[in-house]
Image (cartoon, rainbow, N blue to C red):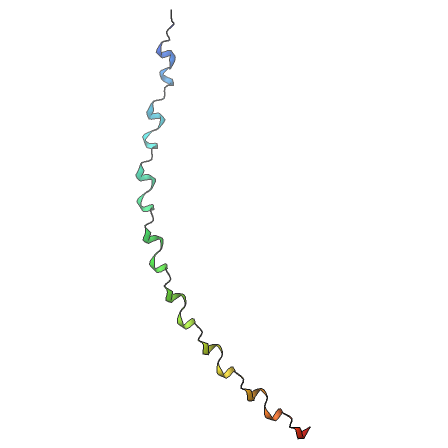
Length: 94
């Protein structure tokens, strides 16, 4: 005769894990909890328009040095000031 094993001896009921204990519903993360809408950054919040530098603000015209301001004419030494005639020794004084 074949010995039959009674079902209670195969897996006792206290050893079985009921499905609700495996993954309780409160442990499941609903999809709306994964990424809340207030956590999403809308594109207009990434770069606000006031943070953008317009081209005219990058180099204002008053900061540019015009060429006439680089070397003013009064700073140039005229040739007559370099060697004044009174400093030259005339040949008859030698």
